[in-house]
Image (cartoon, rainbow, N blue to C red; front, side, top):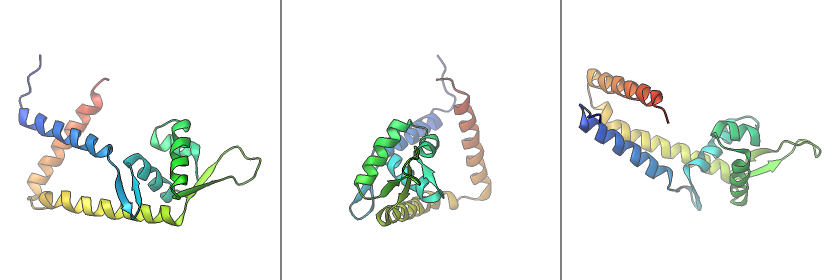
Length: 151
């Protein structure tokens, strides 16, 4: 069995992964009365940042099936965050755009990320440039190794 030469680094990386996974399972209120899970708000974000968005685009972007997109879009529509439409009644593809409430949730999401970036970067910003670069080099190496792992 492989024994790591850097068990502390392994421990903290696993804690980081576990915390990220934990956060991905929790909803957050991005504007009053609108609590969304990360996959839902990231769908809202994608729609907000795209000029025209159809169900196929969302499925491809989010890496999920069209069926899963249909369910999620129905939920978001029920919450009043978006509307579905067709350009022509005979058209097969369904498009979506955000409502005013959807835009407010998107803006709340951007604000959430700004606060999160500020909180997470404050310690990093306090380091000298050499230490910052060492951390970035380590993270780049770690990511490359993670990408080389087989399922």
